[in-house]
Image (cartoon, rainbow, N blue to C red):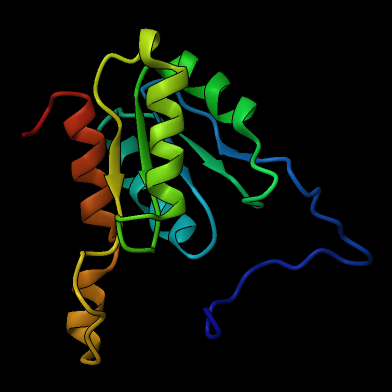
Length: 152
């Protein structure tokens, strides 16, 4: 992320702890993420929008406390969820959030919750292999289409 460029607010800027941010409003699928994968999710949202698939992006921003209610409100609206986390899939924040959604929104879900995470392998040192092991735009798009039953 060191080389990334973006807008920086002038003056003092505070991010509220424990309050997730809806980065993009959508009606088809809720995608929950935080930190570095947010950029990948936003790129996927632009591509999916060209296919008339509107995803709602929830940026958790803080993990403890976790703003569960913002996530649940979004999932109740879209009835589908994808969680994107850069960690390994086992014992990760992403797997925990996916479990929370499955547990607390079970009755409104039209598809199982999908988790896009790093592959469950030791992180490679080769840059190309490292990128292949991490969440990508293509993996997010595939997960979104999977919960929409557009691709298997």
